[in-house]
Image (tube, rainbow, N blue to C red; front, side):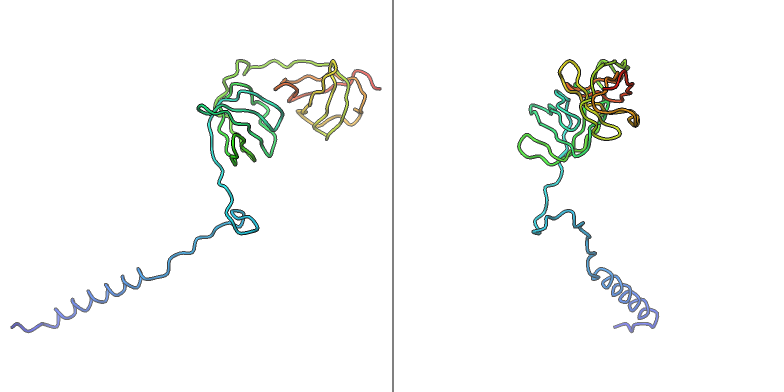
Length: 189
């Protein structure tokens, strides 16, 4: 039987030492994953994760609600914030939100492709009476007995009051919204 040399013993010891270090590294505790508190309800149950749908806008109801057709299904989309001003019927959109039946709540909307015929739209002018001032960027006006939501391109002039007759120039969207509007007072109450 051959006798082991000191060099052989050093190589064997080094091999065992490196294997010991590798074993120690692999035995360290696993990393703890941070889960945001917003992922849980107060009772500790997890929330629904948002689902994403791509579809075509088939009907606009208001500045926060519309219908899309995604595949063979139609969904009613309700957003937490106002819709993009340029959203029109026929546009292809990506919607992410919490689905409950055929309703998508707290949705985020992204326009993927404009398919409406009037991408290079012309502003329209409307004459009506201010019925309500909602904020410095939103008013309601009555035109031929119908109430329209007017979303200003800038701030509403301070001199405008409820009851003033105005000319609104902007882009009509949906059945009762006028967006990117400018307002000129024609006469006051």
